[in-house]
Image 1 (spheres, rainbow, N blue to C red):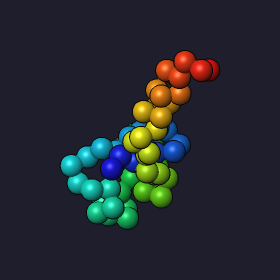
Image 2 (image 1 turned 180 degrees about the vertical axis):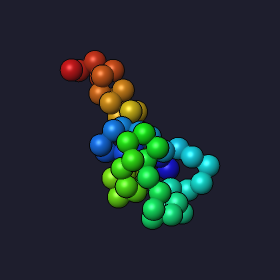
Image 3 (image 1 turned 90 degrees about the vertical axis):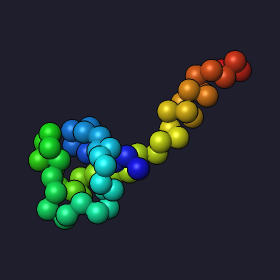
Image 4 (image 1 turned 135 degrees about the vertical axis):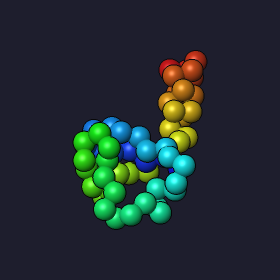
Length: 57
């Protein structure tokens, strides 16, 4: 699962699962707390791609 730092856009895609990071972990780019992160819907780019390729639009 990928997560994104809402304040700066940093994407965490590390080897260690995000949920197992310590509560004191911070974003390496902006220093935002672990609470600043949200899960990325990895199907979103496919959905956007499908919409853009829809010939009926």
